[in-house]
Image (cartoon, rainbow, N blue to C red; front, side, top):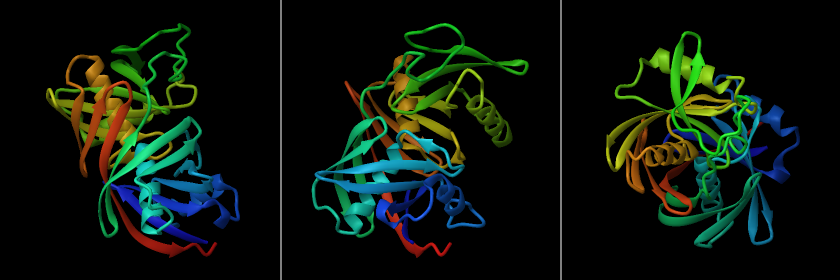
Length: 275
């Protein structure tokens, strides 16, 4: 099976076309994304031509299927342009949570910059989903208890669930990863959750660490950047255009009626999966 490796600021994906796959996607994702026994990636993206748009499915490294991915959509777009499968300035993808549009801004060989519409954020407890026994229209600084500590979390769905925590100074590497893992698997999240750790730099920029559902630590996240910026916007900490500093580079997030994100992508290699 032929595949392409693409990354968005270190958030890396294996991209394949649906017709190439000969095994169950969840099984393939766990195998090919393994960092030691496979090609290594945060997730597997499967695309399929559907008239004027493309089908988009994404599977995490643990084999679970995600609803959407901001960086994944960018990586799928880079693949299509790199392979010459589209020349349109706008690409439309059909995901599990509806249609998403991507616009090409710049290209330099195998490197691209894209803008992605992530749709309208959802805040209610049933749309996250989050279930502590009480329906809530929005959840800001909810006191989530883990062990003997309380973590104030703000919840945002941009098609997939996010729990955002704010810090003046980040915890140690070991500590924030433990917190991320525990929140991801907390029983109040019936479908688990992504977790973002945010530090406010000023009213137009934030710094974020990412713990992704089904993956663990990632260098960046498109949807996580959107959720972090929107959570900060909800709390009145930033304006409606935010520079998100990730461990691997910067992503821009704009908050209007819909959330739009912009960032770089690179196609890095083509391979053949022999299993």
